[in-house]
Length: 395
Image (cartoon, rainbow, N blue to C red; front, side, top):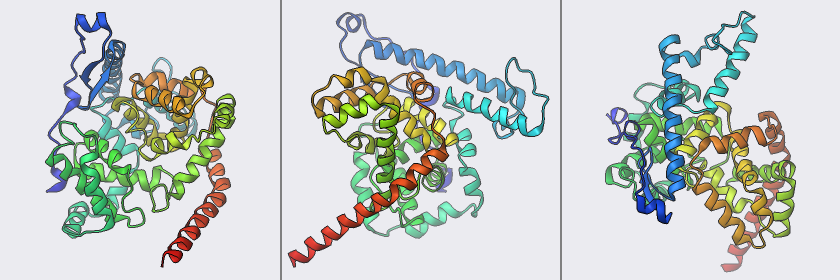
């Protein structure tokens, strides 16, 4: 049965301490090490030290969550009355105020990170994936896979092309079994929603979901809730209209929250979508180290798509002074790529994202989207018109 297929590698219970050699410390040369989810990471000794510190924080946060599990029950985070603030003193107020206060406490806890071993369960519940799955028969995923087996579409052809390019070298994903599992999830979803079908970028998202969720069926439902509920609609459709809207909203937010950077990048004629498009389409999975990406996703599944804007702005904010002295577009791209690839400390990124970037509500961003949609649709219509004119001219 497909939904019972457990993924063979469990990286979460095997967390080695990283100890670069004396020669590495002296020479400060690049060292390679394996992260929590089996990815080979290259960095210097400082990076390795940061990784060790982060792993200790993960263990400490794990202890906090396990204590809550033990004292308040296995599904405590689904019960708005259960959490208490301060020194563990239960709030003796109205039901409504208690729920609001506990929601804030849970938000703070999630921003500090969900322990890797609890991620599958917590994500599945808090994201809405469990509720979505409950609306269909238990046999839905199996029957979907049986129904699409052997069928070929533009989406399946693109998926087959992208499988070997999805995290090459990973000890499980880059194997025949890993490719087969990823293909089933992606092909299954492409038939569930033919408007989305398949878009490049989803392969990285689904691959990381497979590593976290442990079963194909759970990864499938997490992908479904992402595309249908968490992210803006039309982000992954044929013309990527939703993604174009997000990029315009991001440019406006950058101008508002980081005006000096925005003005400088304009003077260089640098379009931020050159880097941010991949961030938004891949949900940072291709740019940030895996544990940092998953810490972003912890918050994404609870707070929604506004988190992507917070994190994208934070990356620019963290390198503001360095970016302001650049003279070439290539220098900007190099700084941003080097920064994202070495952001091994999720707390560093998320602290900037939520404490040093201005407040943004989901409602504010929704208004910005509505404001940008007409211009994006007009631009896409014009592009389509020109394309059709060229085709007519070729005949």
